[in-house]
Length: 157
Image (cartoon, rainbow, N blue to C red; front, top):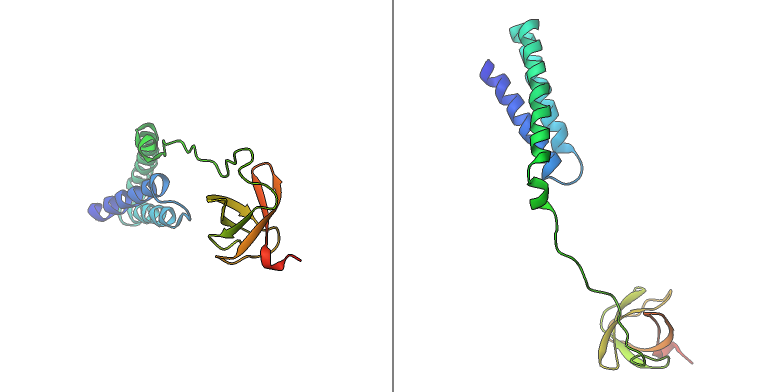
């Protein structure tokens, strides 16, 4: 019986630690792990008596706290963290490279943002509230800092 109880508690603890340190999201694994530990403690109380059950319960609590402290103090978080810096930027428009009235072609669907080829350069563009399909001719209607506002050329008068 001890084997079953200790196995339930050990597997439950392992699943809870995986939930905390590795598995992203929902908490389903944590609930399952906690349920396994509770089942192990319940079996200890039912099959071994109150005294043995209290020993198992207190041992499980101490083991959980110790495992959590060791897991959080270890280098696990350092190995899991993203350490690279993202230095890319959206549009870097040189002065005069794009002007109001310039014509280009969409490279991707603008719904309402997308990519366009203007003056032989790729830029992220914004079509306001309209949707423009890929490979449509566009015209630059406004510049707001690094934001290029476009319209579909065939829809202009």
